[in-house]
Image 1 (cartoon, rainbow, N blue to C red):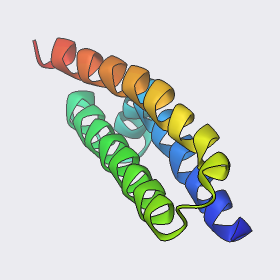
Image 2 (cartoon, rainbow, N blue to C red):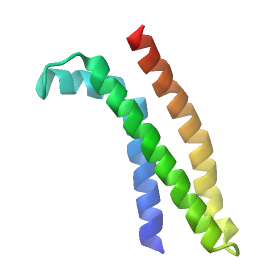
Image 3 (tube, rainbow, N blue to C red):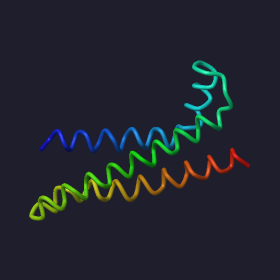
Length: 101
């Protein structure tokens, strides 16, 4: 059971890093990996972050559905998912849209 919590926290953390620091990561990848416009990297990072948030949400939903008696265990994850993911996703989408013009 603890592995599942570690995976959920890891997915949420990785998605948050991709969404919040996507602009810096896009510049880094553009300079060091393949020299293409950073907006393409940023778009990919934004989509990856959103997919990871969706995967974490589905994982929490599946755990919640399997274990209806342990609602207290999932409350922190649900709060984290809604507060952090909504703000990070909105920020990431805003930055990506601004880059595309």
